Structures are given as C-alpha cells and as structure tokens.
Length: 156
Image 1 (cartoon, one colour):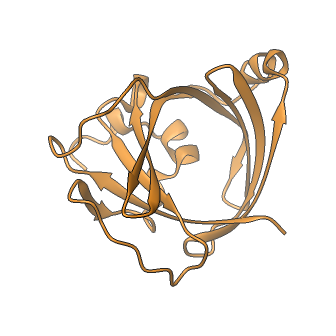
Image 2 (spheres, rainbow, N blue to C red; image 1 turned 45 degrees about the horizontal axis):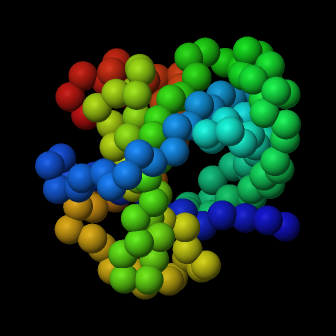
C-alpha cells in the first residue's frame, strides 16, 4: 500500500522568503469526508488524481496518478467549491526537502511548510522559519481549507 508520512508547520511571517517563482497549484476535491479524500490537482502544466485515506496521526494511505491536464480541467469543474489555489516552493534544508505552500484566494495569508518522512520517528532539523507544528490540527488539512477557508477564521 502506498502511504505518506507528513508533518506540517506554520511558516513564521517575515522569516522565509521565496526563491524563484514556485509552481502554481489549483486543486479541488471530488470527495472530502474524513474517511477518504479524492483530489484533482493541476500543477503548472501537469495534472494528478489522488485518493487519500483517513489520517492516522501523521500517516495515511495515498495513491496518486498522473492524468491528462484536459481531464483535470473538466474535473475541477465537478469539485466542491471553492477550489484551493496556492504557489508551492521547494526548499532543501540539511538534506530534507520542504514544500512551502503560499495560499491564495480564500486562504490568502496562510503559509504552510510540509515535510514528507520515510517513517514516523525520523528525526529532522527545523529551519528557523518553521513555526508551530500543526500536523494534528485538522483545520490545516487542504480538504478542510476548502470547506472552511482561512479568511473565515478571524485570528487563528
């Protein structure tokens, strides 16, 4: 079974500066119940369909497949609204690759950093720009940000 082990952190405001243009991501959810999500993602000129299982701590089942971009554009129209828009940057830090998402649209103002790990007990160094860990806070799951955008939270 394919799975992901991922930890999420807020990015400290003013501590991290993007390098380059990053990748433009548009993603929507065909299904976003806690037991499973089915996501369509367009990243620059490529597209993917992902099926993810229920979170078990920082671990969950994940199956992702590349699909034709033209299909993804049509599927986005079938997704729950609003769709998630963000720009993703990759940062290498002491041998680990971090994905930093700068959200746009309804989630503007939110910047999250994620690190995928080979096991739950893998030790890794934290960059200075990595703030509070939010791995266990379901508000920060992309599928929840679609239903309850960051702009609606007031002061988190």
